[in-house]
Length: 406
Image 1 (cartoon, rainbow, N blue to C red):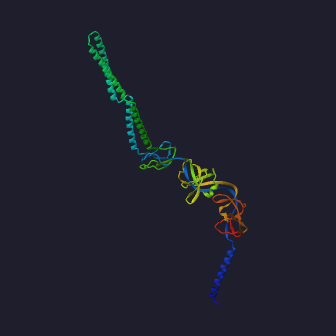
Image 2 (image 1 turned 30 degrees about the horizontal axis):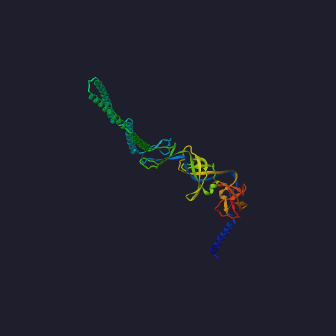
Image 3 (image 1 turned 60 degrees about the vertical axis):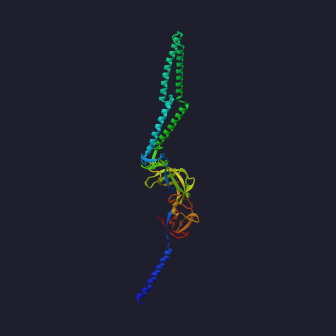
């Protein structure tokens, strides 16, 4: 048999032998599995989620007068005192209305003043002039009557002359009484009451016009920071439209969204740490102020809204921002701790694959508080025990493994 023929027959057989040997060797060699030791250490159990910052105390500033924004006196982020000007609405119509009511008040006041003095000045002056003239004529007529009587006693005047003089006195007395009655009737109580009513009506219209002019100026209702500013020059505002929001920012309320299964861990006064992606490295500290009273939908999640109070002394964290929240639920000192990835579930029971010699054994454990990466084991393990990691690797009780420790 030639050498070439031997090679053609022997080489495939040799390769097949090597492959079979390698497969048998591989099948008999246990797989590498990463393990971790059970350690005693301090564990801070936290709940990491998201939330939204809100001002602790704030008030909305709204327009009361319809019109075009003429001027905006502040910028967003500005600190303002109570009563500071925020914006001004075009008030030309309101100013015209106030001028008209001012004129009505002046006219009504003059009418009342005239009636209180007895009537219109022209009419009163005419009557007073007539009264003065009638009194002078009466005095002269009474003197003439007295003279006529003395002369008649001396037979120096006729009886007819005395009668004529007496009639003259009577006529002048009647004329004077008529003028006095006319002066008294010039102003009646009804006229005065009507005039005073017209004055009050004009004053009420003037007050309303002045108020309309005042609300054209939009003021800050409280001392604080303008954290929201909607008004822009030239913008038309309807009554009730939002102009700005002013609040106290040295403290903020954060509405933290906690998933329903985690709500049982939350208690009042638990520490809270807030971070904001816009300011990396900055943290704001606070505590849980109020626990949820209901569960509400948030996108695809069912959450409870946990209200937290945080300090914001520099006002860097702005209301309305989406933030990250970390609630410290508990602190475990010297607890038995394993990586979270070592914890598995079989038949709804928690456990780990525990290393004994070169095999893994399933052992049920009682998990306790956890952090993002580690969990406390309350029962089932001892310090120094080795537990399998790699939760994506399928293991069974009794499997041989080659343990690899980091």
